[in-house]
Length: 75
Image (tube, rainbow, N blue to C red; front, side, top):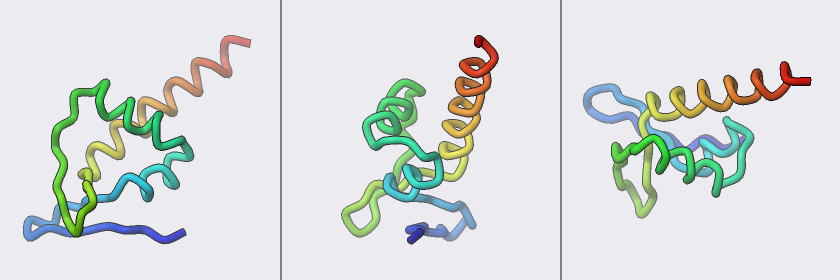
């Protein structure tokens, strides 16, 4: 897996959408839907790619894990 990341001057870590898709195991449309649903506008452009902070990745990861947990316990 090729991880495209960027570390800013403040030591903040940013990831591109494809890397986030691979880490989370979701489709690009679901990832974009979650970003839009959470009202996240913290993105950065670097070399014609939108990069999202590590906090956004963890927020979406937490939400997806919670949804999967609820879905599996319903049965």
